[in-house]
Image (cartoon, rainbow, N blue to C red; front, side, top):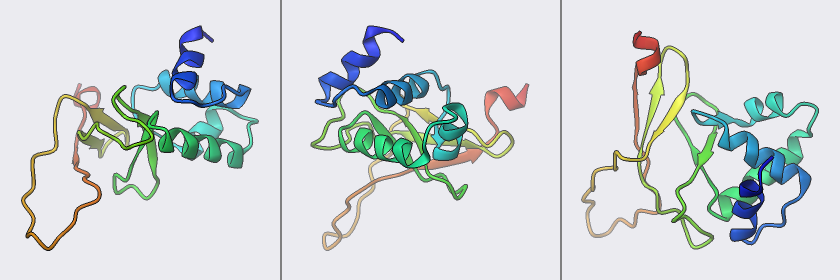
Length: 138
């Protein structure tokens, strides 16, 4: 594990415990968003509750964001550097592949601005596009 993983944690004021280092290192190696169950399998025999608490800490501190892609399981992916404890600032589209079931962040594809009536107060934006990913189209 390289020093970069520990630096990412300390930069967000997170104590770099062994489990936090393992979880972050594993997340950084993923090409697509991953579920708690996927993390649990990848980090076996790690404790599910400890992994969940780690994910919650990471999300609260702006290291990861959660994605509800309609598959029934929350998925997690690494945030851009701009995210912090003050909030997530990486509003982007997520792509869910109907074939391989992967959810991929598309950070260069912004969520279009939505005009709501003035009496609505949006708290969160999410956009998931479903289809077939480039790997499955091959």
